[in-house]
Length: 173
Image (tube, rainbow, N blue to C red; front, side):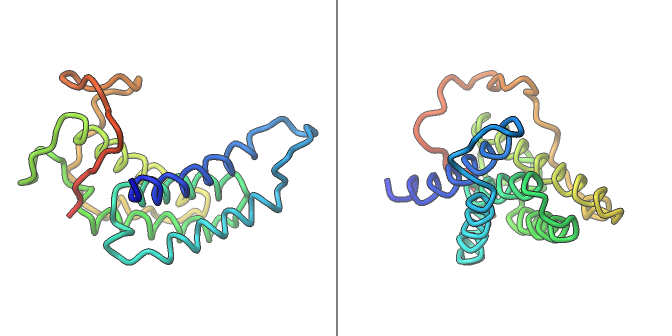
């Protein structure tokens, strides 16, 4: 589907950028640092080009998380990373990701609830890391949230979930 492709391609580009920075030093690469930085800028432009509703979609938040990891590996200045993760956290808050799925009116499947929790806690971790790099307070400290910790820490699916299927539409407010 068109929606799958429009979300998959930016995520794939960021994953390639991340992978290009995880090779051994001195090893020849087909994806030099300059190309990785160009791709980082391209992904930033893609995310900025989304309207506010699109930016709050689950796949867009995932892309932004991957982009934050990419920025860290590309040694983006820490204050820039701190602003980026702060914006990401505020977007997640705006989408209601900070609320535990069981407390919301929407009926989430166990898989969707688990994925929401994992994404929320990933975003919080990215903000804490960037805040520590800058010796600045993280936004999580002053924000109340009710989202519980993910239940499966070893990438096991929650009980009752057998198949992920093709594409997952996770409701955000």
